[in-house]
Image 1: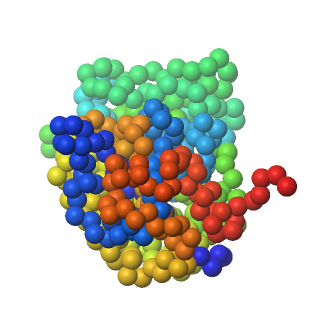
Image 2 (image 1 turned 120 degrees about the horizontal axis):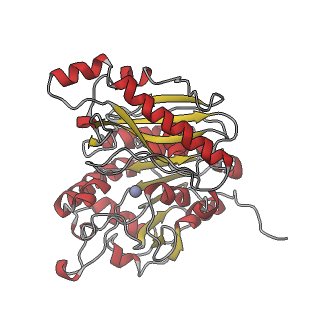
Image 3 (image 1 turned 90 degrees about the vertical axis):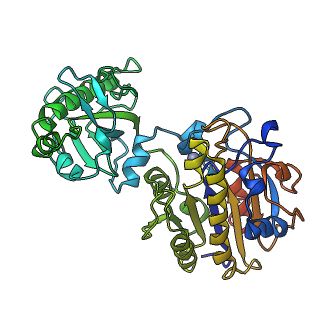
Length: 415
Ligand SMILES: [Zn+2]
């Protein structure tokens, strides 16, 4: 263990895009956040390109970069991250998919991609599919688990399979469930598409007769009568950062994908009561869990999803309110942190501007405070101010190496 501690706090989609119609003021500009602003004054401030200027990142790719892994080299799809985040052990040859329970009519036309946002008995439904025998590819086994609400994870396990196949999820309603097709010419991709198509057809045969669905129909609810899959992925071939830098690390996050990346990065993934990944998440519980985890770890990664949700909804006021709540979480942490031996960094995985209602390629602000990051002297933490900070403009990929260097854990390049 290092003598110094690190907190890396990532607020999902926190950054915004200043626009003329709002006098170039963002939720970060107008939110009352004395603790975060104080951190910006005491620490070094700059701008971060999540990937590089003009590249719009998904949250998964952005988190790869934030943890120091070049997504162009190491990103191998989303499904594997979800599977690991859900607690499933993956072998390097497994292919994992993100799935939804959906509702289809007798022609397999999608009526509802989320089966009425089903919440109950999804585990019973999943059990009826888990371990399914795929007869057209008999050496491939299907492992299937429900996760949160209508979501689930499918793992195809067997020799010579590939993630290079298309989704069965048509990503829209009133069209048929898609047939998976190979995305390259390899036999492995062809075989995987065949296996996935058989799993999908059989999921309909089994689920439409399932007693949970018979009851749902009798109550007038949409039955969860098929599984549609998307985002195939394999385990990324990365060296855990805990191994790379010889540190111990833990993660406080509720979003399964983030939990998955953190686990693959070698972190202990903590379960925090009340951490939901939603607007109602218990930030105070997360702060306390992070502080407690720092006693046994060098690095604690804390992820807050709540900033991204109002951003996708275009809700400026709600984003501001969430930032004010997050500021209180910082207040709790500051009381117990000594900047003489602790680094605390705050940034976003990407911008989700209110005006765009989706991720954008805009750079995001960062502050890093600690024993040897000089103060920026800036009075406010915002997108505009960060352009005048003393870190300059870096890539997300640079953050972990910069901190590892301060911890004395970076290896010299060259002699
Ligand atoms: Zn995100």
